[in-house]
Image 1: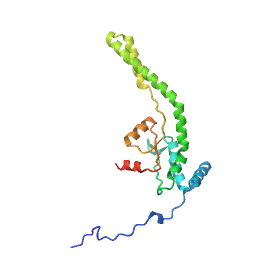
Image 2: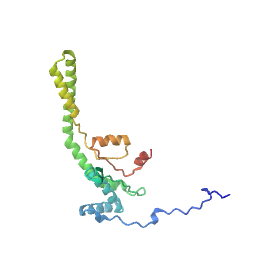
Image 3: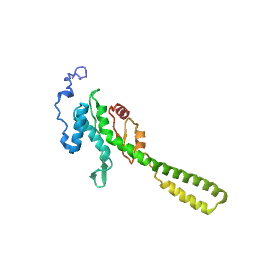
Image 4: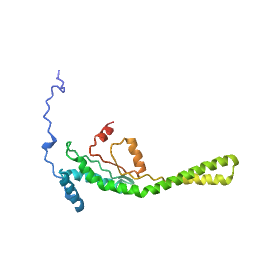
Length: 209
């Protein structure tokens, strides 16, 4: 009878650590000059390999370009561009500092947009609430007297309320988030959202279930 091999009698080769491979340095010159200078400056100030800010830069650029470019596949089938990247460094290698430096322009823009739109959003919400209150009042009056002019206004208000687009304060970046919350954030932000995390542990835990 032929002996059946089991894991106990199979000889395995010793694992080859990743750090035994000689990998090329990130080709910084693929970026425009202004970004080359920026990632080099971040690498120098944080004392990290230039690969770190370069990978973070790709994620940040993807955030800024989201929903602006599509890949045509076949016929009418196209998909928006998405970037999935991992920056793997041991603890204590200043990943957080790198991410903070690269995310700063988006964080600043998000703050500016919130300040710019906050008043408009408040006004639109107040107008919508007033229309809803007016509609409720007319419905009560119509239920009593059946006045056709009230009915016409009720229908008009109902259509306006249905068509009203309620803006949310813009948000471009999130970190550890559940799939359900991510769907809500995307719905509020034109289906655009970047998951950027210097640690990433929470994201992978959520993905793993």
